[in-house]
Image (cartoon, rainbow, N blue to C red):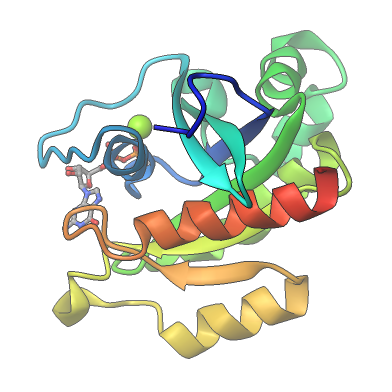
Length: 192
Ligand code: GDP
Ligand code: MG
C-alpha cells in the first residue's frame, strides 16, 4: 500500500499497443494482478486497469489501457487517410488522449509483429502527447528456441527511435515490473 492511506498524488495513463496476440493483455494481467493465462481471450473493446505504486515517496496510480477489436488492427497508410473522417480517428484519439506513456509490444517469435512496430509508432506519434515516454517491449522471451527477432535488431531500432527497450515474459514474470517501473519513473521525472 502507498504509505499514508489511499491518497493518490499522481494518475498516469499508459497505453498498450502492438499487433494482436503479442501478449498485451497478459502483460497487463501480470502487472495489475500478478496473474497469467495461457488461453487468454482476445480483448474486446477498450479497458483499463490500475495499480498504485510509490515513486520517490509519492503515490502514483498507473492507469493502464488495453484494447483490441476490429477497429484497432495494425494501422496502415489507408487507415491514416480514412482517419480524417469517420470513426477510426475518434476511437484512436480517445485511446491515446492524455496518455503519458506507452508500451509498444511485439512478440519475439513473430517477425511480422516487429515489422509492424514503425506503423504503431507513427500512429502513436500522430495522436499522443509529444513528451510521451515509450518503451519498446519484446514479449515472450521464454520462447527463446522460437525466436525470430534478435535482441540486437530491436535494440538498434530502439536507439534510433529514442525508445526504451526491454524483452519481457508475461508467462515467467520477467521484466514486466521493470518495464512499467521504468516508464512510470520517467513520466514522474517529466511531470512531477
Ligand atoms: P494480446 O492480443 O496482445 O492482448 O495478447 P494476449 O495477452 O491475449 O496473449 C496472446 C497469447 O499469447 C495468449 O495465448 C497468451 O497466453 C500468450 N502469451 C502472452 N504472453 C506470453 C509470454 O510471455 N510467453 C508465452 N509463452 N506466451 C504468452
Ligand atoms: Mg488483448
